[in-house]
Length: 174
Ligand SMILES: CC(C)(COP(=O)(O)OP(=O)(O)OC[C@H]1O[C@@H](n2cnc3c(N)ncnc32)[C@H](O)[C@@H]1OP(=O)(O)O)[C@@H](O)C(=O)NCCC(=O)NCCS
Image (tube, rainbow, N blue to C red; front, side):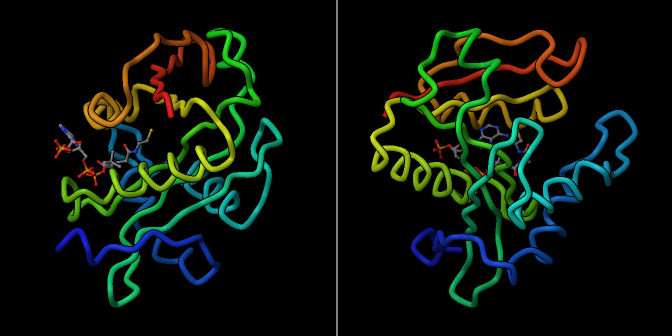
Protein backbone atom coordinates (compact mmCIF):
# COMPACT_ATOMS: atom_id res chain seq x y z
CA UNK A 1 0.00 0.00 0.00
CA UNK A 2 1.34 3.40 -0.95
CA UNK A 3 1.49 5.84 1.94
CA UNK A 4 -0.22 8.52 -0.18
CA UNK A 5 -3.37 6.42 -0.44
CA UNK A 6 -3.84 6.52 3.34
CA UNK A 7 -6.16 9.21 4.69
CA UNK A 8 -6.62 10.21 8.30
CA UNK A 9 -10.18 11.19 9.14
CA UNK A 10 -12.21 11.79 12.32
CA UNK A 11 -13.97 8.68 13.63
CA UNK A 12 -17.60 8.16 12.71
CA UNK A 13 -19.82 5.40 14.02
CA UNK A 14 -19.55 3.40 10.76
CA UNK A 15 -15.84 2.85 11.45
CA UNK A 16 -16.45 1.19 14.81
CA UNK A 17 -17.21 -2.43 13.72
CA UNK A 18 -13.99 -2.60 11.66
CA UNK A 19 -12.02 -0.98 14.47
CA UNK A 20 -13.39 -3.52 16.93
CA UNK A 21 -11.86 -6.28 14.76
CA UNK A 22 -8.50 -4.49 14.83
CA UNK A 23 -8.75 -3.94 18.59
CA UNK A 24 -9.24 -7.62 19.35
CA UNK A 25 -6.10 -8.47 17.38
CA UNK A 26 -4.17 -6.47 19.98
CA UNK A 27 -6.06 -6.18 23.26
CA UNK A 28 -4.86 -9.50 24.64
CA UNK A 29 -3.18 -10.90 27.70
CA UNK A 30 0.38 -11.45 26.40
CA UNK A 31 0.93 -14.50 28.63
CA UNK A 32 -2.21 -16.40 27.53
CA UNK A 33 -2.98 -14.62 24.23
CA UNK A 34 -6.61 -14.42 25.34
CA UNK A 35 -8.64 -11.42 24.20
CA UNK A 36 -9.34 -8.96 27.04
CA UNK A 37 -12.98 -8.38 26.15
CA UNK A 38 -13.67 -5.92 28.99
CA UNK A 39 -10.89 -3.67 27.81
CA UNK A 40 -11.74 -3.97 24.12
CA UNK A 41 -15.40 -3.22 24.85
CA UNK A 42 -14.33 -0.31 27.07
CA UNK A 43 -12.32 1.24 24.23
CA UNK A 44 -15.28 0.70 21.90
CA UNK A 45 -17.42 2.68 24.36
CA UNK A 46 -14.87 5.52 24.40
CA UNK A 47 -15.24 5.56 20.61
CA UNK A 48 -18.93 6.25 21.07
CA UNK A 49 -18.16 9.22 23.34
CA UNK A 50 -18.25 7.65 26.80
CA UNK A 51 -15.85 9.30 29.28
CA UNK A 52 -12.91 7.24 30.56
CA UNK A 53 -12.08 6.59 34.23
CA UNK A 54 -10.37 10.00 34.39
CA UNK A 55 -13.58 11.60 33.05
CA UNK A 56 -11.90 12.48 29.78
CA UNK A 57 -13.44 12.31 26.34
CA UNK A 58 -11.17 10.58 23.84
CA UNK A 59 -11.04 12.02 20.34
CA UNK A 60 -10.41 9.35 17.74
CA UNK A 61 -8.84 9.58 14.30
CA UNK A 62 -9.07 6.73 11.82
CA UNK A 63 -6.72 5.71 9.01
CA UNK A 64 -8.59 4.63 5.88
CA UNK A 65 -7.53 3.69 2.36
CA UNK A 66 -8.94 4.75 -1.03
CA UNK A 67 -11.76 2.24 -0.66
CA UNK A 68 -12.65 3.57 2.79
CA UNK A 69 -11.29 0.40 4.35
CA UNK A 70 -10.39 0.99 8.00
CA UNK A 71 -6.67 0.41 8.71
CA UNK A 72 -6.21 1.68 12.25
CA UNK A 73 -6.95 4.39 14.78
CA UNK A 74 -5.46 6.62 17.43
CA UNK A 75 -6.95 8.98 19.99
CA UNK A 76 -5.94 12.08 21.92
CA UNK A 77 -7.25 13.63 25.07
CA UNK A 78 -6.26 15.82 27.98
CA UNK A 79 -3.19 14.61 29.87
CA UNK A 80 -3.95 12.28 32.76
CA UNK A 81 -3.24 13.94 36.15
CA UNK A 82 -0.87 11.28 37.51
CA UNK A 83 1.45 11.89 34.56
CA UNK A 84 1.27 15.68 34.78
CA UNK A 85 2.02 15.58 38.53
CA UNK A 86 4.83 13.02 38.31
CA UNK A 87 6.66 14.85 35.52
CA UNK A 88 5.62 18.44 36.36
CA UNK A 89 3.93 18.90 32.99
CA UNK A 90 1.39 21.70 32.66
CA UNK A 91 -1.86 19.90 31.72
CA UNK A 92 -3.07 22.84 29.61
CA UNK A 93 0.14 22.76 27.53
CA UNK A 94 -0.03 19.11 26.56
CA UNK A 95 -2.13 16.35 25.07
CA UNK A 96 -1.94 12.60 25.54
CA UNK A 97 -1.89 10.05 22.73
CA UNK A 98 -4.04 6.98 23.43
CA UNK A 99 -5.26 3.79 21.78
CA UNK A 100 -3.07 3.67 18.70
CA UNK A 101 -3.86 0.41 16.90
CA UNK A 102 -3.05 -0.63 13.33
CA UNK A 103 -4.27 -3.81 11.65
CA UNK A 104 -1.58 -6.44 12.20
CA UNK A 105 -1.21 -7.28 8.51
CA UNK A 106 -0.40 -3.62 7.81
CA UNK A 107 2.26 -2.97 10.44
CA UNK A 108 5.42 -1.09 9.48
CA UNK A 109 3.90 0.59 6.46
CA UNK A 110 3.81 4.06 7.94
CA UNK A 111 0.15 4.04 9.10
CA UNK A 112 0.93 4.48 12.81
CA UNK A 113 3.30 7.32 11.98
CA UNK A 114 0.65 9.06 9.88
CA UNK A 115 -1.86 8.84 12.73
CA UNK A 116 0.79 10.11 15.14
CA UNK A 117 1.73 13.03 12.86
CA UNK A 118 -1.91 14.06 12.47
CA UNK A 119 -2.33 14.12 16.24
CA UNK A 120 0.83 16.23 16.56
CA UNK A 121 -0.64 18.64 14.00
CA UNK A 122 -3.93 18.88 15.90
CA UNK A 123 -2.15 19.36 19.24
CA UNK A 124 0.01 22.14 17.74
CA UNK A 125 -3.02 23.83 16.25
CA UNK A 126 -4.53 23.88 19.75
CA UNK A 127 -1.41 25.66 21.03
CA UNK A 128 -0.06 22.63 22.92
CA UNK A 129 3.67 22.29 23.49
CA UNK A 130 3.99 18.58 24.29
CA UNK A 131 2.52 15.27 23.21
CA UNK A 132 2.77 12.48 25.78
CA UNK A 133 2.09 8.75 25.64
CA UNK A 134 2.00 6.13 28.39
CA UNK A 135 2.39 2.46 27.56
CA UNK A 136 2.26 -0.57 29.83
CA UNK A 137 4.15 -3.85 29.61
CA UNK A 138 1.26 -5.47 27.79
CA UNK A 139 2.14 -3.37 24.73
CA UNK A 140 5.92 -3.63 25.05
CA UNK A 141 6.20 -4.56 21.38
CA UNK A 142 5.05 -1.04 20.48
CA UNK A 143 7.83 0.63 22.46
CA UNK A 144 10.25 0.68 19.48
CA UNK A 145 7.61 2.64 17.59
CA UNK A 146 7.41 5.16 20.42
CA UNK A 147 11.22 5.35 20.59
CA UNK A 148 11.13 6.22 16.90
CA UNK A 149 8.34 8.80 16.76
CA UNK A 150 8.65 10.55 20.15
CA UNK A 151 11.73 12.59 21.15
CA UNK A 152 12.55 10.50 24.21
CA UNK A 153 11.22 8.52 27.13
CA UNK A 154 11.01 10.63 30.28
CA UNK A 155 10.69 7.72 32.71
CA UNK A 156 7.97 5.52 34.07
CA UNK A 157 5.17 5.44 36.63
CA UNK A 158 5.29 2.38 38.86
CA UNK A 159 1.60 1.92 39.62
CA UNK A 160 0.05 3.63 36.61
CA UNK A 161 -2.69 1.15 35.71
CA UNK A 162 -2.87 -0.70 39.03
CA UNK A 163 -0.48 -1.73 41.80
CA UNK A 164 2.69 -3.00 40.11
CA UNK A 165 1.31 -2.30 36.65
CA UNK A 166 3.75 0.35 35.46
CA UNK A 167 3.80 2.47 32.32
CA UNK A 168 6.69 3.90 30.41
CA UNK A 169 6.21 7.53 29.36
CA UNK A 170 7.46 9.31 26.22
CA UNK A 171 7.25 12.93 25.16
CA UNK A 172 7.51 14.91 21.95
CA UNK A 173 8.00 18.65 21.88
CA UNK A 174 5.66 20.12 19.30
C1 LIG B 1 2.54 0.49 17.44
C2 LIG B 1 1.83 0.51 16.08
C3 LIG B 1 0.60 1.37 16.17
C4 LIG B 1 2.81 1.10 15.04
O1 LIG B 1 2.11 1.24 13.81
P1 LIG B 1 2.82 0.96 12.40
O2 LIG B 1 1.92 1.43 11.34
O3 LIG B 1 3.24 -0.46 12.37
O4 LIG B 1 4.13 1.90 12.51
P2 LIG B 1 4.86 2.68 11.33
O5 LIG B 1 4.97 1.78 10.15
O6 LIG B 1 4.21 3.99 11.10
O7 LIG B 1 6.29 2.89 11.97
C5 LIG B 1 6.93 4.16 12.18
C6 LIG B 1 8.40 3.89 12.46
O8 LIG B 1 8.53 3.05 13.61
C7 LIG B 1 9.21 1.84 13.28
N1 LIG B 1 8.55 0.72 13.98
C8 LIG B 1 7.22 0.49 14.10
N2 LIG B 1 7.02 -0.66 14.80
C9 LIG B 1 8.24 -1.13 15.11
C10 LIG B 1 8.70 -2.27 15.81
N3 LIG B 1 7.85 -3.15 16.35
N4 LIG B 1 10.05 -2.47 15.92
C11 LIG B 1 10.93 -1.58 15.41
N5 LIG B 1 10.56 -0.46 14.72
C12 LIG B 1 9.24 -0.25 14.58
C13 LIG B 1 9.00 1.66 11.79
O9 LIG B 1 10.00 0.85 11.22
C14 LIG B 1 9.07 3.11 11.30
O10 LIG B 1 10.42 3.51 11.23
P3 LIG B 1 10.91 4.51 10.03
O11 LIG B 1 10.15 5.81 10.27
O12 LIG B 1 12.37 4.63 10.25
O13 LIG B 1 10.52 3.84 8.76
C15 LIG B 1 1.46 -0.93 15.62
O14 LIG B 1 2.60 -1.74 15.65
C16 LIG B 1 0.36 -1.58 16.44
O15 LIG B 1 -0.82 -1.45 16.13
N6 LIG B 1 0.76 -2.35 17.48
C17 LIG B 1 -0.18 -3.09 18.28
C18 LIG B 1 -1.02 -2.21 19.14
C19 LIG B 1 -0.22 -1.50 20.19
O16 LIG B 1 0.67 -2.06 20.81
N7 LIG B 1 -0.55 -0.22 20.41
C20 LIG B 1 0.05 0.59 21.43
C21 LIG B 1 -0.77 0.55 22.65
S1 LIG B 1 0.05 1.46 23.97
